[in-house]
Image (cartoon, rainbow, N blue to C red):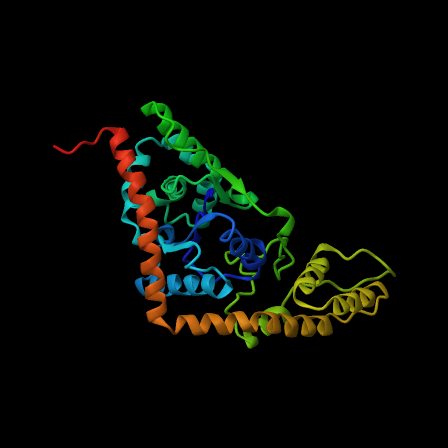
Amino acid sequence: MQQIVLSGIRSTGNLHLGNYFGAIKSFVRMQHEYNCYFFVADWHSLTTHPHPGDLHANVKSVLSEYLACGIDPEVCTLYVQSDIPEIAEMYLLMNMNAYIGELERTTTFKEKIRKQPDNVNAGLLTYPVLMATDILIHKANKVPVGKDQEQNIEMARRFGKRFNQIYGTDYFPEPEGFTYAKNLVKIPGLDGSGKMGKSEGNAINLADDAKTIHQKVMKAVTDAGPTEMNQTPPEVIENLFKLMEVASTPETVAFYREQYAKCQIRYGDLKKQLSADIIQFTAPIRERILEIQSDDAYLAKVVSMGAEKARISASATLIDVREIIGFRKF
């Protein structure tokens, strides 16, 4: 089986509908077809200096949501990043072969310093090195990513190839981006934009309660309504129809599209229907999330088992890397 690793869902917030349809459903399938390593990226979240209580709570939330969506710790390797100390040592070693200029030019670094200009820390600069380490430490062949993460895969390839060239070896394989593209559904945001995301503040989280979902949907951006029969909906309205397509019945979608085509659409009614359908869709997942979050013994068992399996892979790689570099015991 080929290795495959998720290069982190950061422990900075909840999973949302975009995550679920864009990635998590694929991960549930992948775990039965590949040797999968999935993890909660809590070290990555330190670049934003989270409060200690928030850090732990966020790890617990993301872990519970992974499990509630169908990630099976008995089938794949599911772990918390900070439980694997080998990652930190290899991150240090890989940093020695990463250069300031190339790190400063990365799109992610430029974006992050724009978003947090008062906290431009070294962790932001070397973020791609840690992401590369997450991948290389398991010698991953394939990494499930979206278009916005392709540069990070290229950086992982670059650092792996550079290590091989410096030390005259072919130790690290070149990881490739991987997706079940035909099976992914792009979920738009509630603000009329093309992508749902937690940082954009336009997301419906899997753990949101019914009241929160209803409030969010009712605030979704719309326009003044159609002015001509059978006109093509603008993006801001088409996005609502796309949300309805993943949460509502085909008959419901057809009804509201027909209402729009006839210039009889009432956005308030559409939003109420969409809200009810999303609540019905997410309710079983939310119930499972709450059930898992309340079971500390089960979560402790999951992370312990995941750390044990991940460390077997990580420690084997680190031993080899140290040997290749030239570290020897006296």
